Image (cartoon, rainbow, N blue to C red; front, top):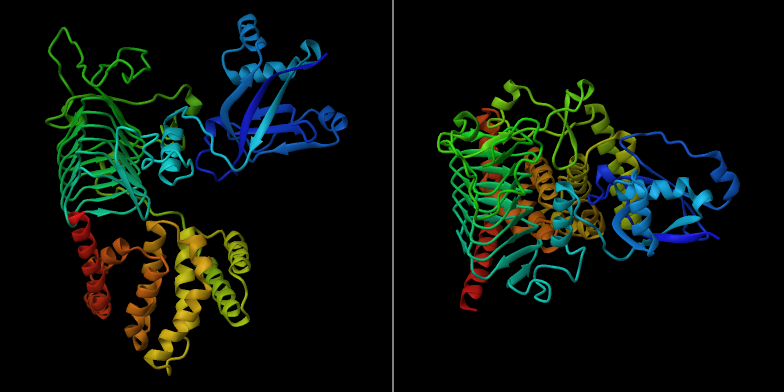
Length: 542
């Protein structure tokens, strides 16, 4: 008699889902009738897989699934602990499941799965999933587990506002700091002048200086970041102090009580701790150094100032490749593979923080834009639904292998070219035609322009169009106002664009045109600023 010893919980999540971790990506063969797992294999970056031919012969309703996220939740029978004890080869749960499947005919044990699609379940198993699940909570995918629900966050008092901003009531924010989207800031924290923060978790009693840029990062409690720093895709543990002009990027982890700087740039993937690394040691000290502890050294502490800065305190750790074959690559702590950096590349991090995404050939971009323009023109004239236009744009995107940045820019330019195609139209006709086109394209905007980066791509394309078409520049502020009212563009993105014309490669004439173009939208921008100030005053009165 065969017995089910375990039921594993999986969630429907396609390969592009951010909560899927490469380390745990799995291909599963299961019975459609009973949800019994017949075969299970970790992908390990492989693109080809082998399944026993007997699986298909004995199971006519077999499913091969690669759209499932392992939630790391298992309902086990009382036999499981004993089976683990009796088999020394079972080091992990994956080993256990594989062993059960291999020995099913002999032992008579089976493993089933339960698949959920409308619920949230995930487990933090590494830094990548820690970051992904944190973002899921900020995006409210785990509702009702959200920061503003006091039932789950009883010691905190967060308010929730547009763009997934969760702010404690006890904050000190400079009036011109920019809080873009998807972030939470704990009580007692201060943010300085000119600082921009997005997609970030900030704990309690942190001090963020002036002109700091923080994106995709996690700052725990009592962290200090001084002026002119750049923090991206990094974890700063409690009591970390970042001095002026420091760059921390690309999956770096700074452990408790570490001091960095001033005037340094950490190598991507760096790990810094107050624990000195011993020979052949792999644990870099996260477990040994609690919030209040300091390392105990029998001899005076000497830190490498070239690694942690003139006023820094800490030791720099790096992962070492396990074999010669892997020496050219390092596993990023976020879970994504990256090429190793040479010393010359490391020295240029401060001056070249971000790299541009790969772009398709110019001819492909032009052909893609033409197809998007045709889709939008015919869609508006023939009343094609937004869903069908999205399908056509997606088909063109995959055909020409363009980026989402190209998609957003092409949609923006095609919208304007479709609506403002006749230079004989007066201002009223331009505004009416523009509004009609935008309202029809609202589902398209909602599908593609989902974050601040997408909004910046869109507003950049709008700027390019109006620079090339001086005859309709007065319609710019109508365009921005409509996109703002439709919740496509946020006020923070519009204000930032208006205040920063950007470089024009020493082209003084182009810089002058950009300033003139922004002047045509000055009245709308002034209205936005006044509305924001009134909202702030009302909040202060409350």
